[in-house]
Amino acid sequence: MDDLLGLLRIRVKRGVNLAVRDVRSSDPYVVVKMGRQTVFDHDTFSKDDKMGDAEFDIRPYMEALKMNLGEIPSGTIISRVQPGRNNCLAEESAIYWMEGKVVQDLCLRLRNVECGEVEIQLQWIDLPGSKGLGSS
Image (tube, rainbow, N blue to C red; front, side, top):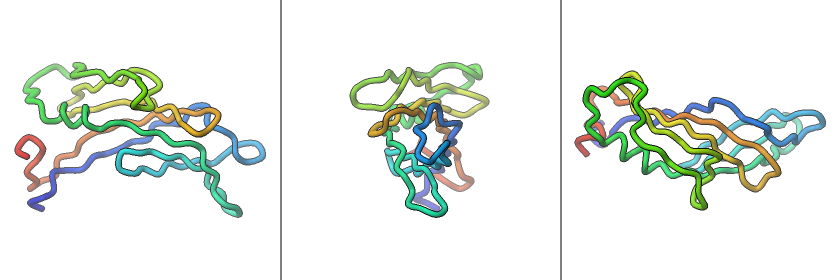
Protein backbone atom coordinates (compact mmCIF):
# COMPACT_ATOMS: atom_id res chain seq x y z
CA MET A 1 0.00 0.00 0.00
CA ASP A 2 3.07 2.28 0.12
CA ASP A 3 2.73 3.18 -3.58
CA LEU A 4 -1.05 3.68 -3.51
CA LEU A 5 -2.10 7.33 -3.28
CA GLY A 6 -5.88 6.81 -3.28
CA LEU A 7 -8.72 6.20 -5.71
CA LEU A 8 -10.30 8.40 -8.33
CA ARG A 9 -14.08 7.96 -8.35
CA ILE A 10 -15.64 8.70 -11.75
CA ARG A 11 -19.39 8.94 -11.42
CA VAL A 12 -21.37 8.89 -14.65
CA LYS A 13 -24.28 11.21 -13.92
CA ARG A 14 -26.19 10.97 -17.20
CA GLY A 15 -26.09 10.86 -20.97
CA VAL A 16 -27.80 13.64 -22.92
CA ASN A 17 -29.15 13.42 -26.48
CA LEU A 18 -27.29 10.18 -27.16
CA ALA A 19 -27.40 8.73 -30.67
CA VAL A 20 -29.98 6.02 -31.36
CA ARG A 21 -28.32 2.81 -32.52
CA ASP A 22 -31.17 0.30 -32.23
CA VAL A 23 -34.62 0.48 -33.85
CA ARG A 24 -36.17 2.93 -31.36
CA SER A 25 -33.60 3.57 -28.63
CA SER A 26 -30.22 2.49 -27.32
CA ASP A 27 -28.90 0.87 -24.17
CA PRO A 28 -25.57 2.69 -23.75
CA TYR A 29 -22.81 2.00 -21.27
CA VAL A 30 -19.54 3.79 -20.52
CA VAL A 31 -16.03 2.39 -20.74
CA VAL A 32 -13.44 4.54 -18.97
CA LYS A 33 -9.84 4.38 -20.07
CA MET A 34 -6.97 6.43 -18.67
CA GLY A 35 -7.70 9.90 -20.01
CA ARG A 36 -10.42 8.72 -22.38
CA GLN A 37 -14.12 7.96 -22.09
CA THR A 38 -16.00 5.87 -24.64
CA VAL A 39 -19.73 5.20 -24.85
CA PHE A 40 -21.17 2.09 -26.48
CA ASP A 41 -24.65 0.79 -27.15
CA HIS A 42 -24.82 -2.63 -25.48
CA ASP A 43 -26.60 -5.21 -27.59
CA THR A 44 -27.49 -8.64 -26.27
CA PHE A 45 -27.90 -10.38 -29.61
CA SER A 46 -25.60 -8.39 -31.91
CA LYS A 47 -22.31 -6.51 -31.90
CA ASP A 48 -22.10 -3.42 -29.66
CA ASP A 49 -22.32 -0.15 -31.58
CA LYS A 50 -19.87 2.62 -30.79
CA MET A 51 -21.76 5.72 -29.67
CA GLY A 52 -18.88 8.21 -29.50
CA ASP A 53 -15.80 9.00 -27.48
CA ALA A 54 -14.47 11.90 -25.44
CA GLU A 55 -11.21 12.94 -23.81
CA PHE A 56 -10.53 15.20 -20.87
CA ASP A 57 -7.38 16.37 -19.13
CA ILE A 58 -7.16 15.26 -15.50
CA ARG A 59 -4.18 17.52 -14.68
CA PRO A 60 -6.19 20.56 -13.50
CA TYR A 61 -8.10 18.31 -11.09
CA MET A 62 -4.90 16.71 -9.78
CA GLU A 63 -3.33 20.17 -9.28
CA ALA A 64 -6.38 21.24 -7.25
CA LEU A 65 -6.05 18.11 -5.10
CA LYS A 66 -2.51 19.11 -4.13
CA MET A 67 -3.56 22.58 -2.89
CA ASN A 68 -3.70 23.22 0.84
CA LEU A 69 -7.37 24.23 1.02
CA GLY A 70 -7.67 24.33 4.80
CA GLU A 71 -10.99 25.60 6.06
CA ILE A 72 -12.55 27.15 2.94
CA PRO A 73 -16.36 27.08 2.81
CA SER A 74 -18.13 24.18 1.14
CA GLY A 75 -19.15 25.08 -2.42
CA THR A 76 -16.10 27.30 -3.06
CA ILE A 77 -14.88 27.11 -6.68
CA ILE A 78 -11.14 26.38 -6.74
CA SER A 79 -10.60 26.71 -10.49
CA ARG A 80 -12.38 26.52 -13.83
CA VAL A 81 -11.48 24.68 -17.02
CA GLN A 82 -12.65 26.22 -20.30
CA PRO A 83 -13.77 24.26 -23.38
CA GLY A 84 -11.17 24.28 -26.14
CA ARG A 85 -9.60 22.45 -29.03
CA ASN A 86 -7.64 20.16 -26.70
CA ASN A 87 -10.62 18.86 -24.73
CA CYS A 88 -14.18 17.65 -25.31
CA LEU A 89 -15.82 19.95 -22.78
CA ALA A 90 -19.25 21.10 -23.90
CA GLU A 91 -19.19 23.89 -21.30
CA GLU A 92 -16.98 25.36 -18.59
CA SER A 93 -16.04 22.82 -15.92
CA ALA A 94 -15.75 23.90 -12.28
CA ILE A 95 -13.43 22.28 -9.75
CA TYR A 96 -14.80 23.01 -6.30
CA TRP A 97 -14.54 22.16 -2.60
CA MET A 98 -17.61 20.27 -1.36
CA GLU A 99 -17.93 18.87 2.17
CA GLY A 100 -14.16 18.44 2.60
CA LYS A 101 -13.52 16.98 -0.87
CA VAL A 102 -12.30 18.31 -4.21
CA VAL A 103 -14.96 17.63 -6.87
CA GLN A 104 -15.09 18.34 -10.60
CA ASP A 105 -18.20 18.21 -12.78
CA LEU A 106 -17.63 17.75 -16.51
CA CYS A 107 -20.02 17.76 -19.46
CA LEU A 108 -18.23 16.00 -22.33
CA ARG A 109 -19.35 16.32 -25.95
CA LEU A 110 -19.01 12.97 -27.69
CA ARG A 111 -16.88 12.84 -30.84
CA ASN A 112 -17.14 10.61 -33.90
CA VAL A 113 -20.92 10.48 -33.61
CA GLU A 114 -23.77 12.72 -34.74
CA CYS A 115 -24.85 13.83 -31.24
CA GLY A 116 -24.53 13.21 -27.54
CA GLU A 117 -22.97 14.37 -24.29
CA VAL A 118 -21.98 12.57 -21.10
CA GLU A 119 -21.98 14.27 -17.70
CA ILE A 120 -19.46 12.91 -15.20
CA GLN A 121 -18.14 13.85 -11.78
CA LEU A 122 -14.62 13.30 -10.43
CA GLN A 123 -13.92 12.84 -6.73
CA TRP A 124 -10.74 11.70 -4.97
CA ILE A 125 -10.93 9.08 -2.21
CA ASP A 126 -8.06 8.90 0.27
CA LEU A 127 -7.40 5.38 1.49
CA PRO A 128 -6.42 4.56 5.08
CA GLY A 129 -2.69 3.92 5.18
CA SER A 130 -1.97 5.65 1.85
CA LYS A 131 0.55 8.48 1.69
CA GLY A 132 -1.99 10.71 -0.11
CA LEU A 133 -1.37 13.23 -2.84
CA GLY A 134 -0.06 16.04 -0.67
CA SER A 135 3.05 14.06 0.33
CA SER A 136 3.90 12.67 -3.13
